[in-house]
Length: 462
Image (cartoon, rainbow, N blue to C red):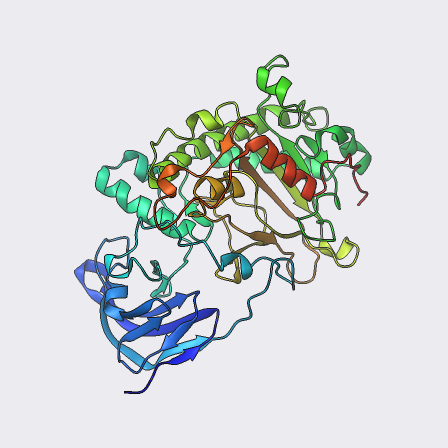
């Protein structure tokens, strides 16, 4: 028998024909594409793939394929060219045109996560799957899935377990889509008011700039925030707000950086304060409910995050990305980065541009009217002991550079006094504790320093 041939690559792909459940109880043929971010080996055995940690029959790998109908997939036969390997350079964070994208996925994404690993493969590579009905294609390992928060809240144990499996499968990428119940007219109204503010003269917008707030409230102009490790600042302007606490509140007295005096441009856009605060509260409620799923999936009580986020400095940010053609040379809308907080929620924007890093490649994503995108932050990565890696993303301007984009995001923070230490349920053998404990306040301040927001910064002219 011929010896396996080693192929040193970053991404391995293979295609096969299979039968999957079709409409009205029937079946249909689809093409399956397998992906694995690990050096792979081609074997002479038909129907097998071999990895560094062992060889696995394809039927066993396909058996746990999780489809929405909960039914199985039957492998038929490999295609004429059953195995394709594509070499890809592994870049270090901060190098090339997409810093952090390939390198960030090298380690840790499978560690400690046996939540939905098949028993036949528990010691080896972890596989995940979804079915794209529009193309009749199933993708293994690191798809961004859509979960139904509302179905989870209404469903029984079986429904909840299925949704949790899909959630944690998707969050290995750092991203997941979710259904929501945010009022659509509220977002439309908010975008209309925000556009009115952002298109006001610069001298008007700068009246709402607070240098002492370090970008945590009010207006921040273009070329101010710089992604960690980058030399050039982002071509974006921002308006930040949160739920105000009373002046004598203990949290506000102890952590003034996290709880600055809020300012919104009510005099420029009458009614904007009430609309944006209502929008903030609706988004914060969604995030609180979504964190219940994450808590259960991590092996904790669903109320784990409740006290953490109560009266926390959760921040909502509106961003306008001006046409890139008007920027100085070498700048981009938003350079690759990960968020510091627990999770971030992004509803639909006024245009495309958001790209996420999945298995070393940049993918465009587009939240729609009926679904949000959620990404995990560095604080959740620490609490989960690396089981839920932070989602790396960037914002890229369309070709031509003549379009603008307005979006709104919300960063869900814990209370500044929260000690971010890996949960005991995430530190079981063979995944010992990877992160030391740090307070949320210290973690936030460190990031603000690295993105150059701790020093007072004036708004830059457009």
